[in-house]
Length: 62
Image (tube, rainbow, N blue to C red; front, side, top):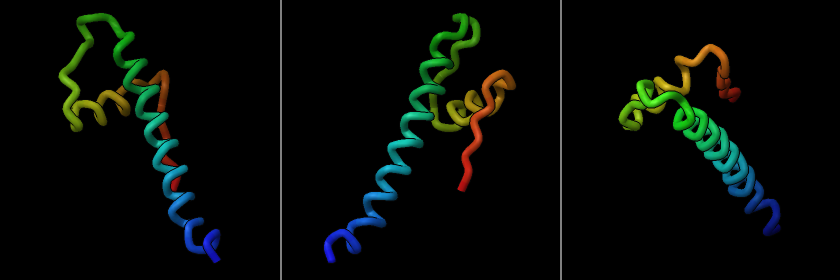
């Protein structure tokens, strides 16, 4: 019974951890850019910096 109850929570935690890992990789690759490319990392600019690099596209599949 407990596994049936907790499996959606566990799956959502695994998915959230995967999103965090991809965001962390994007943040690290963004930080390794030349200094002229550095931007203030508000959430909007962070999402823009993830999507405007054509060399590393990040695709979120539902």
